Image 1: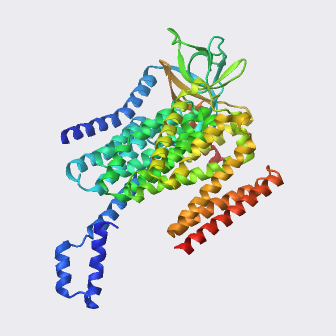
Image 2: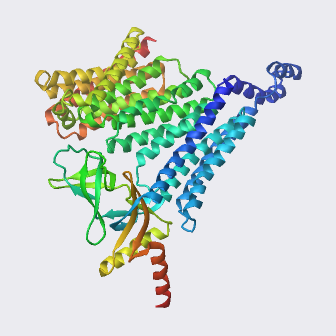
Image 3: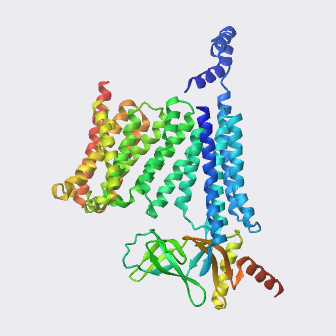
Length: 189
Length: 432
């Protein structure tokens, strides 16, 4: 009996380790081998009690044409084929029922739909940042977007339906670098 | 009071008894020899267990908050390693406790609680490192399931105290995401053998009592969330059946009062609250519109849940009637009464008549509780009886939907009932 309980303890420890390990493995593989896309975004700053402060990413590409032969349900998982526009940013081309043989695709969730388009939740809708940094990012983005000079975008690696966020860029600079330059400019000016 | 508490009390009294010459020193010594050493250890160890469990809880929550700060300076590989740190620390501690301190409840409670929180912190940090989208229901469910074995392996109550609210939280947020939240009932049942073991052994009464409170509070919340798809059709029968099961089951099983009290209280107040709600004209008229069977075939899990709860409630009601526990039976009668009224529909039973039946039921219930209280001289019960009747009066007074005539008649009936109850009680007292 004691040995059985001991075995169960070891198994439960292994299961506890396996969950974060499998999460890491899947993401690392995608970051290493996945195809890179850029998504236009608008960052805003909310809060998660467990994972801390993050920047919610309001993605321009989070919608696709309504499929004709598919019955949709709220929060349903769907497969979305990706394409790239003339400016080099990714968008959701269409919703498909089976994983395509060629081209990149993502697993997303249905948020809402109307007669023409389906609003989607893509698997990278938040960028976690240090607690003081997240509001800064939102402020920096707002300042930029008002002047309409630069835009914010994220780079994402996509592989086998999984998308992993690489970096958030403002004015073509990684966000940490952008904020550093802004701070330096503020001190000098 | 347990035997240990009685002995502790006796030992505290002995010096005074000797001083006032009720006992001589030799008799006091004989008593001490008979009952053995003073049982002070229990209270001290209970305090130690509570301190250890709360300490581990606070440290674990502190680790989650520290990691939530999100240290930008750390590289991805460093953060990946860091995400395993609290988990490995918790597991190492748990392994040490398993081999060296398994007999210490304080160590077991503290370590199991810390490890449960470390599991959550670890998954959360990986999510933070890779900017994983906010799938909160899945995170909560995986976290709780990974922590569940700790309850049994360490015999720890605090992880169970966290587990039930955790799965209830999953049920609430999962309902919004259209997840199969009916599985909640299976998930909630998983720590039940542990809780039942504590209740049956009659040890660790404090832990058993706390677990009972948490369970009795979580189940009604989860009932609404798990049957959200058909709730507008079934809320009244579902909740009345659950409260009847709570009240009757806790009354019929010979459970320690610390365990049965939460179920009795929530069951009785839930029944009274719902029945008061159902005496409101607007609420009652809305019910037949969402007719009982209109939820459709897709709502079969909700109907199955209702059937199970209702059958249990009816079985317990019959048992209560057979053993002539009239007051308990009156509480248990609410669920079948409302279901019969709903089945009859407004064609067979006009809604005004249904409202009057509801009022009479509550009046009888309040009167019966009051009578039982007066009979036994139990002040809390007298207050409960008066509370039910006063609540009924207050609801009727503010219920402007009823016409003045109906309200006037109801007030007269209630007033007469008060007088009759008083008269009956007086007569009984005179006869005694």
